[in-house]
Length: 611
Image (cartoon, rainbow, N blue to C red; front, side):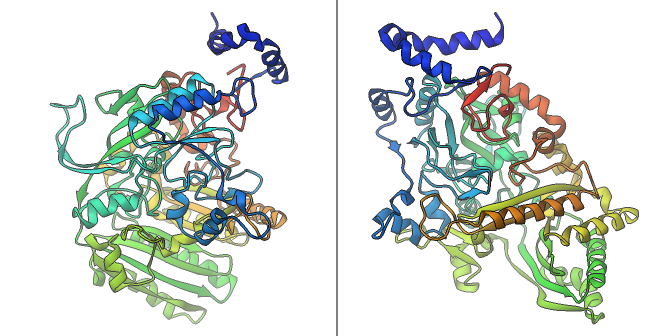
């Protein structure tokens, strides 16, 4: 029997009771309405949509934690607005509030791509058993399934209308280990310090437990409200990736619910193919991760930052400044001590927002002194914001109480009554809360561009790029310059191998204020958003003249990327696709431009007959 015939037969089995009970006419009409080359999942109102009794059984199976979802903005009609609407508008700039709403996402949408719309129902999972029940229900009833932890996906992969949501927000247990060995690895894997984290935890939860209270380091994300599970599955860069590698490379073990409802442990010794796949293969494509165990590391004595802004008086001076900065980076910063970014604006201004580890403040100041001497010696440049270095004891890096006392305003807390005191985000990340994306492009830049004979090519492309839009070079999102051990560990992940030889990830992005459907007030200016997106497209095209084959980071990339398989995973994609076929042959798990998504329609509801 051909594979497609086998799948047809499997899909037909649940139809038999309805056919025998007189539902044949309705089913036939539904089938006739389907394009010939697709097979569809069911939506509300379809004949096959689960009955009220079926939903009630699921509610019973998950201990009452089945929620029927509606956006709080659905009540934002004519004045007076509903209490839910007013509450949502009050906390629109609070990512902790947005994360606590199963009907909302941290991004409100992307022009001409998607808008944040709630699932029909959500299982507010508190245990792996809840996740199993939701997965089995979705499979048995042919539902579109969505998984959300932090809800930060720029691509809209953590929501979908007419779907069933597995919401892991409440699975936040964290446990530190002095000596952890993966299941089945005794005798082959040395015990090591580690932390086990529930799938719903945010990185601020992890940092608070591991660093502030535990005195160790775990490689995670820079934005504190990002979900741990999603970041690890997408690769996972933090501010200090050139020192500690990627979050995916630090994964020791995971518990994952697969499409058949089985609970599997995945590590280097048990289900190693699945383990490799979730290390950078993208969240939501291979199963529902419910727990992760990550290695922890010794803390350096200090973490620190260097920030400031330099403006050039002319285009000629700006190009010269770009050239000097590229050379300076290659000479002084291209090593494991330094991370984060330098942004090159279209207004001939450079913004420096770098971090360091393994140095004390005077050492960091000494590193930057030659560049600042060069700038001060030339009248065509001005320090719009002084370039200054600051350091702090590493244990206080994510210590909310420390920042409240010593640096108020650097962090922003959850302003709701009774909110955990440690729930803070960096003030610089608040602009992303609820944002409506106009465009987002990224490209890994190989270290070969830093060679003396190629720097001019990079400088020309970078200057040309800024004539259309500003660009940030995120040096912590490329592993070139890291230690051989960290590069080797990242090589054993599914992330695009280009990251191993990239000195930076270039990011070009633009956005507008929150635009959740139903919100009162002015709607997004779509014409302006499209013009801005077009300018960003010209900018990335100009930058790619320096490296036409540059890939892109799956979590920070263009929604409209055409060659996404190669861009996101490069030569790893065939192996990832094989893992997908093994553990999810029917394609229960779907996300936009995720592994295996080419077999489905853009909304994930209809499967191609030839897939």
